[in-house]
Length: 603
Image (tube, rainbow, N blue to C red):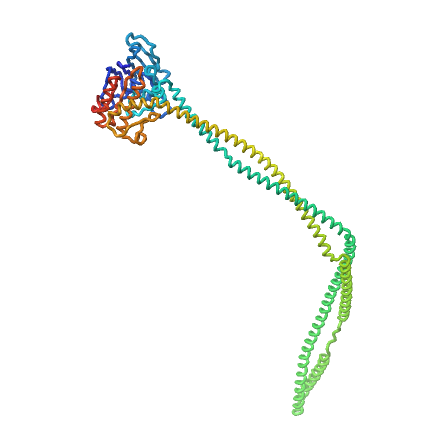
């Protein structure tokens, strides 16, 4: 097919533009910003339309990117020629794909034509938009087009792209299923199941042993309880004698207690009587001391009378002597007065002396109390004798008990208490053992049920593991089979591409030989490393040659036009010259639309 001409109403920055195409090379060399890439995108849009825009997708789509700034009709027309004739396609792009307008006319009659539908590009070239982009449309920095299933199917020739896609889909599904099975296998841990089952069986055996031990403990406790009860029955016959002994002993103890209380009361009375006697003796001593102090005081007064009487006597003697000497009546009177005073004082002296010389009689009135105290002490001695006699009777009774029972009362009681304590202990042990037995039996039932669940789970997991393993093995075999089939199928398109590629690439003087894998990705033959190890210019040459090889192999029915949107920007002068020669050679077979912004790359 060939492009004849096009008219752009409005597309991107191009507005009301007409372009005519010749049959071979159409080289357009314009400065940056002219709209060369826009022209290439317009030609592609005339055949394949524009994809839908997306508000959610932040990436700018072609529909949005090439929305014209002017208010003119978004689109235009393209006249082309195929083996069916010459046609003119008109497209008017709207905001939505469903609103886009499409018309096809016979260019010779200007009448509407139904030779092709809206899917114009796919019907003419027998490839989809992706294949077109990967082969015919050489975009800037997009030379490494993806080799999709449609390209592979077309190269093989007798299968469809759906069949090729089915292989990829099948491989993908097998891998997904394989991952799913591996994930399921990871959830199955047979070793853990076996170990868990073993641990719980050991636990079950341990519980069984504990149950047996508890049963034995209960049996031992019951036997000991029986023996103790028999011993208690033997001792029971002695209980009556023990009660009689206790009654008699109790009576003696009560009597002794009464006697002790009487003794205590008697001793209290003795103490009280002692206090009374002591108080009276103390009072008596106080009176004697007071009397002695009084006598001493009277003696001092009496001495004063004696002294005054002697003085009066002396004065009377002096006065009588003076009287006889002077014979004065006054002196006689004075003598008489002194003599009378002497008589009176001397008489008083003798009276006081006789009175002070006699001790005052103090009556001893505590003899009765002392006698009572003596009687109380005699009663105390008697009471102590009575208590001692009763205590001897009690000791005698204890000896009789010991002789009759072979042990003391305390030992007898301790034996009874000991039997009761042992009985309580065994009864408590029995209750504990019965509680443990019930607990162990319940736990055993739970473990037994759990062991059964674990055994069932182990069997289930083993069956599931076996099934998953077989399915995984089957998938791996299927995957291997499909891989072998794919490799066999790939030979049918890799070899022709490789051969065609070599026809182009041998014109370049490079050291590395390029080969292709089943995905038609280029590799360096010496190391089978990816082509990323090549320089940018060499890699562009590889991709250009691969594209021309694919075009020669794919488009056998309808020869396409080829759009090259400045693909040589990474080539040096030497490789650029060779690349131009290849393009010029290909222009003999295909219509070339060559777009560039630099005169050095202009054809």
